[in-house]
Image (cartoon, rainbow, N blue to C red; front, side, top):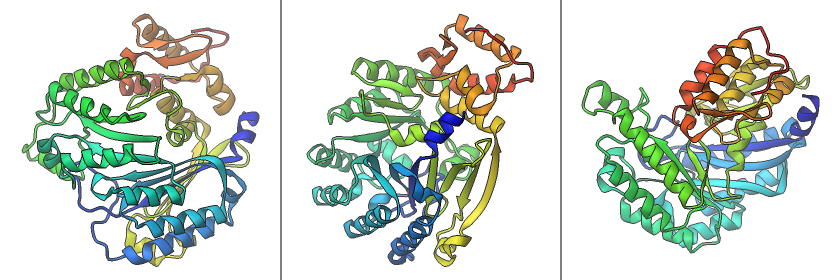
Amino acid sequence: MNNWYNINMRTTGIYIHIPFCKQACSYCDFYFETSLKHRDGFTEKLIEEIYHYGQSAFAEMQVSTIYFGGGTPSRLHSEEWTKIMSALHKNFTISPNAECTAEVNPEDITSKYLSGLYDSGINRLSIGIQSFMPSILEFMNRAHGSEAAERALLHISNSKFDNWTADLIYGNPNQSLEEFKADVYKLLEFKPKHISAYSLTVEPNTRLGSWVRKKKVVPQDDENVANQQQWLSDYLESQGFSHYEVSNFAKPGFESVHNSSYWNHVNYLGLGPSAHSFMWEENSTSAKRWKNVSLLRDYMELNPTKIIQYEEHLSLKTLAEERIMTGLRTKKGLTIGELSDRYNYNIGEKQHAYVKLLIQNGYISGEDGGIALTKKGLLIADTIILELISRQEDVPVLNKQH
């Protein structure tokens, strides 16, 4: 564990939450503000927080990724991007090859805007398409229509950005497999190197959640959702994409570095309202995670030393279970040795028996002490992960191969 720890303590990612949105999507439960009341002062407040952490342990690490999420980061103006990126470079050691991603929405995209983004230092885009179907976009309450989505993708295709990803959502109420196929076919016309595709999730504190509770909307049948997911995986792999994580597909070399850092427990710093941070403790036997205040009003009023809303300390067992949850959602999986060396977590007899059963039934491939879900297993990843963790016990399996 010490060797792993010494290497990864020198690396960090940075996540920046931009809370402004043009309007509220029906399914979204991320923190955002449609009001622009605090718009003018937000950038300066964010830069103040950047300078605050420029005096912390994060400043001693090399930044391998920067990710602007939200909200809608493309609500920022070009000059604001330049100011923020300049502050980051002044306060942190950013790798020359750092992956710097900005989430953008179609309604904000012009050739001039993309040029300004690229010049500021952003080298990867994540565009929220979700669907090209007018009825589905209306149901989602997206701010863009299908024509705006295609126009934005055309701008990106003709820009300096070679590395970009697009989001799609499937499993919408009444969405047929043929309609979802049409969305995928249309997106592939623009030759993305990465695609993120998510099954529509009903979150309780959203407009969609209210509709479902009031029976105004009936969620898609689980079997139909599974069919859409299975078709997507098969088709994208036939088109040269690797299904490297449950919801993510990439051409070789275009996997998301930032997301992989989360999955692998690399330190990361969260800036902006509602952002989370994670850091290993110096003794490498625990870690801490903390969250900034959620409300933009509070974020704007508080000193950077006062904006942490809560902090939790994570034991090695908790971290090991997180690693199982994230690792088994990826094509690479994880190894028994990693759990033992990094987290002092031993697979017990009940877990070993469960893994053996999953291998026999084709849900897991296990070679040389590794555990990775097959394509069949990825379809029910959450169930497998929860079952595996629940079988943990204090009796380790010694010298057994899977």
